[in-house]
Length: 353
Image (cartoon, rainbow, N blue to C red):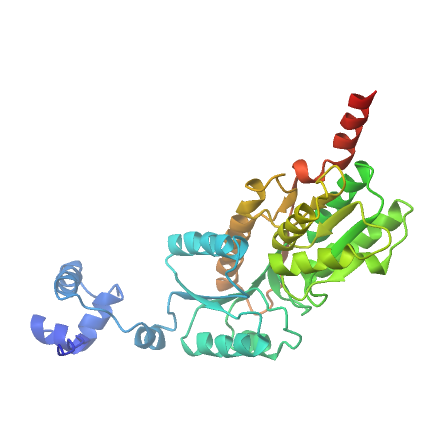
């Protein structure tokens, strides 16, 4: 077994150049009291010897780590990975490295990750909370330590916090108005966890759109999802097919369950959109690959990540009386073939005349 290579220290660089350890440290941190010639010599030696600075030690000395901590609920699908891309791109431009954690929708794991990020001396924390997060003491700990905290997409009900979210209510309401305009009247809804601001707003829009158009809210047409995958959507659709009167449309809070709905309807030879319209939410890549293509809502994922970093950078310059800022992004409804219920029905009617 090969012997592990000894890690170089600042003392090794100092001995090689014949200068003090403090001079090496100040040169690596670009201190103004060190000559440009000395800095160039130090950096050239560091590159030649493949010297790696101790980030945590540097953070303890300078009070800055140039690290940004990010906590996401999961990396399934395209939405959160795309948000992270937006975060990394802008954070890198600003000179920050990004440390990414995944809570797997578990609040206990989320709490441990927040503690780990604080111990790593990160300069800021960006979080999208888990579906099981109902207490917020770990976030208060971040704020008490004076570390900038920004939420994105999923945001807790905490006063004076910064966050960037999509207008989920508006996006869902527009989907409902589209379905109603197609002539749909018995619209089922596959709802997400009610504790999350995102899916709560989508369900609220579903309910209020029905009432605004003089239609009753029928609880048996709402299926509460425990997961956000295709299997959950398929199981929900099988449940809806047991109703004495079938829905004429299904609006799912996520795209993957909507994909499961399409699979079940095809298996039962129920035509989409002629017999039943289907719509989702998130604009996952597969939505343009299925037949019929799935109507969905673009969540502005990359823009959300970039905006979260901009808020963080603003907070670095904040004063003690910094007021929390909440930025709301506009959704974009992408109407595709799966929801063209009225248009297809009317075309078929004209062909039979």
